[in-house]
Image (cartoon, rainbow, N blue to C red):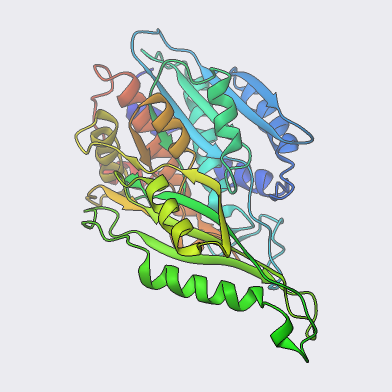
Length: 401
């Protein structure tokens, strides 16, 4: 079956909601991660639909899940990308338990409902519908569900090193986008800054050197003097600088001899992160040591790429809303995958970007269903460009389910 309208008729609201609730109830908070249990559950779910699956274990309970729907190998593969880990639920009380997957008033609540188990569930549902339909594809559909995206993108790095994405021509990431089509993301430069001082009793501060005060002066210099002046990006705006953490001191009556701060600097395509890091080191001088924690490179996809045009077409057709390509300041597994393979990336997710990492996190059911349909349309049209041209109407789609 290559008829897109016929595939869209197979999308059932109850099915994708139940799938999302199931993955929300499997806790995969990072740290420590524990993605292995979720990977095993999803592998069984995919296997029942006839997809070839492989769990790629890491230390402890960390794991990636790779599934593949084979095509005719006549064109490059499409990667469905999502991560299985979530941030912790936090200390603020939730209206509904964070790992309950509660359905209420047209929304599914839970830690990760937005970032990004909602998108993961929609990708998984679309892949299973394609597998069960017997659709013939000119290229493979690769499902890549990773661990450790919220911290270091280690899962994405592992699947690349293992060659699991060989033959990929484009990657679709289901991070929150409110169903907008995002084609660019900022790079994230993370730096650790350590100020050294000399301990003493606070009744005799002249005998010590206060590392916290040294850090305060350093951070003021960075804020005032770090040169991030570049021409604003049409989709990403300007680079940003943020102090993410600061720690120092042991007790109130001891001059602190160490203080550490961690900086998050978001850069635009074309900016050299090493040059920026060196600027920060120079501002630290001899009193503050600056080391690299991580660098997640920016991504920029050409607006005229096939995956972009196919995605814009699918989103407009399913939602009835015309969209223009946009950019985003957060990083995704696309930073690793798109840059390493030199392939285009799009980000399309059902959740609102404002829901990311929030208490009472949710995704709207209507957008979740629309996302499944969008992913189906993109997969068929990208992998079968000559066969996937049959259009259906937005009205017919919106009346289903």
